Length: 289
Image (cartoon, rainbow, N blue to C red):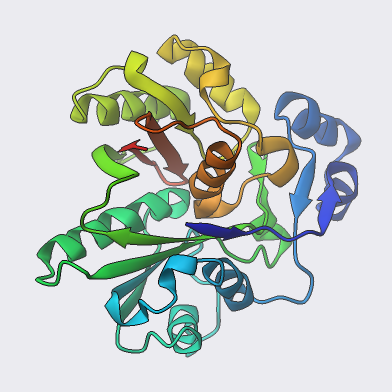
């Protein structure tokens, strides 16, 4: 797995002014939600951001021929004018034209986990045991409408890329759960429940889970989720909330890399990736590190 996070960051006060937030709303986002800095890359395109994260995948080098599928998990359904297709541009740039490439968007900011699930199913049906799938997440926050989710969070431009195999000796998927509510559900209880459902599907309990890797919607929401789950807040990796904001579908993957590199995940640890998407989609996956 690899990532790209723009070095340029905009502070909440400056960004709040650009987005038309009043000073009192800016204080809400900073003090209650824990949001302070947001990475953006001036002059880059969505394809630039995706290629930047994929370029860090050292495992991809000399194994391009084994990549059978390229799956772009995207929160925003319409991000480029017809007939431009970002995923096709990416496969050409990475010399992966032989792969089947497509985009999924239906689960909003939980679509990154959907992309992993679809990649796993495709690989399970592939007769070649060496077959790989490339999953790409994160996107361009190209307008104020895309940047701001009012009274919820602010979106930024981190991206992540992951190679998926049908079998591996680390970061194995051992449980998952997804639920789509037909009408607007109660956000916090639904998010807590999907984590419990995923853990149960792995035949584990919350006591077995070393860390939850969240979508970085805001600190306040996760504090309430932890209260419902009966676990301390430090069991959720929230280090990136103040420095990165919400990177659409890429949050859990970005959090994985920082948690791993920071020593928060040890060999054999069980951890959860969790996300929710506007429209009522809740997803969680359990992995063995």
